[in-house]
Structures are given as C-alpha cells and as structure tokens.
Length: 366
Image (cartoon, rainbow, N blue to C red; front, side):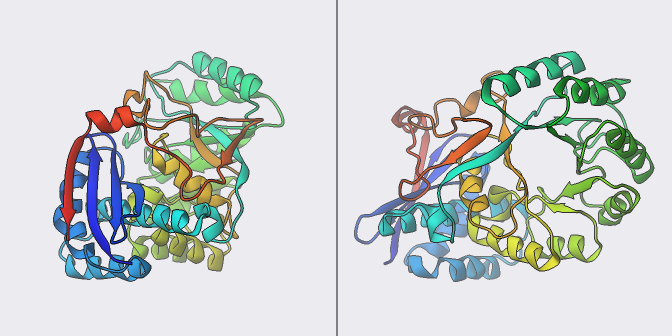
C-alpha cells in the first residue's frame, strides 16, 4: 500500500501529521513538540518528499533511506520530523489490522503505573510538596519526580538554597512507600552532582536524572560510579551512536529515550533492544500530554525491559496551555496511579476537530 499524501496540521507548539494511503485509509501521527512549525518545514522538505510513493510496509527502511539522502543533516530536527512519518504509519498499521499499536509490537493494552512528573522550578518546596500530596491522595500516584538545580545551570541553583530545601521537604511530605525521583536537567559538574546525589540517597530518593551536562557522558559515568541510587539519562539523544557511547561508558543505570526526539517508535524500539542487550531498563521521557505520552504508553506495555513506571506530566493550563483540547474525551485519565493504554485500533486517540479547525495546514502529495 503506497503513501500518496502527507499532511501537517498544527502550530508552533504541537503539529499533527496525517498519512493517506492509495485506498484512502489514513493514520495520524505527530511531529515532536516545541518549535513544531520549524519541524513541519523540515518534514515537507526533507522527509515527506522522500516518503511519498513508498510502501507503508517498508517504512523502517524508508526512514533509513531518508537519513542517507539527508546525510548532511544529522541530528535533532531531522529526527523530530521523521517522527511525524513513523507515528502516522504505526497508527495506520493499527487501524488496518484493527488492533492497538501495543498489540502490534507484542504487548497488551491496560493499566500502566505512572509517576507524577513536575516540570516546575519556579515553585517553592512547600508548594511542590503540597500539590504532590494532593495528587497522591486524589489519584493514587505512588511515584513522583521533581526538579533540583537550574536547567543547564552550570552548577547554579534556581535560587540560592532551593535544592537543599526541596529535597527533604518533598521527600518527607510524601513519606514512606512512595518512589521518589529527581531531575537535574544537566545542571552539575561531577563533584557537585555527587554531593547532591548523597543528599538524595540520605532522603530516600532512588533516581537521579541527567545530573551532568548530557553531552558529557564521562561526567555522568563518574556520578554513577560514586552513588548507589539509579542514575538516568538520554532524553536528548537522537542518534544511535550516542546511546552506544552511554552504554559502553556505563554512564547510566536507566535509559530514557524520547519517542518524539529520537525519530519515532521504530527507532525507539531499536534503542530498547540496545538497552535489553546491556541489561538496562527503559523509562522513556514523556514530558507533556500531546501524543508523545500515548506513544510511550504503548511502548512500555510491549518491551521486555520496561522501567517501573511511565513519566506522566502533571502540568496543565498554567504551564502548557497549548496541550489543552488536543484530543476528544480523556485519553490521559489516571486510575489508582495508573494510566490506561487503550484497546482501540492505532494509538487509540482522536484529535479534537476544534484544534484542527484553527491549525496551520500544509500537504505533500504524490
């Protein structure tokens, strides 16, 4: 079945893709979020033109062919654009087979434990603790992640003393029986990261994400070697060579690919296989409630080396106003601390017509 049309429908924050096959059947996907309007331009100029007229069954090879034809443009934007093709094909495949994507890749739909993930640093330790406790008591979350340091902060805190305060304040408020995770977002050098890591361990926190600049693999490896908690990373990495380097240098205990940054589900499955061979679990990055979290839900219910939980953003209108009203219904409901992987064909979601009506539109056709 040939691809005869590829469309982008969205805005600068989030842009969906739609694939049309020669029999008129369709599949929906998404480009990576953030500067999605730039990614849409790349999609039509450097992805869609190569994919139009190809067989849907050959999509994995088409992705490799695109990378070869666009070999002078390795890296993030090309991968973010390829995601729009990959995710639309997987949705089409699911609908053609009458199965959810999770079933196509060897898993089953149903409940999936989630951790409540805070994106905020402009929040006091007390307010962060208060909202976590409310989420624990209301939705049954049994795992939480919050932020320390400043994002790519060169060792600086968001404000003086915040890290030293937010770690014990939140940990104590959540109490025992809760998995506690912390994200450094590439803030620290090895010495400072190890000092923060000991503080985390002393407060019962078992996961330290991206403690050092993510591009300094050996720095992260130093931190991992010095600590007993799990060191995690990889969300920014979009080339297989980066994953191989992190594995060979024993930089992390947990791998965290982002389906949208990496180039789609197919490429993420390859990284999962790399992790499986190395004996490492996968806890993917999924930092907003666009299609990325749904794709990650299907992935985690199918791979043999899933981490303990799904990242689930708790930020709403005040932080991500653009993610409101993307889908019909409530695909991201939480029950007893778990998200629900749908059993409907494809990704199992329907994009809201109101969003599509207001979005920018472009197409490439055969």
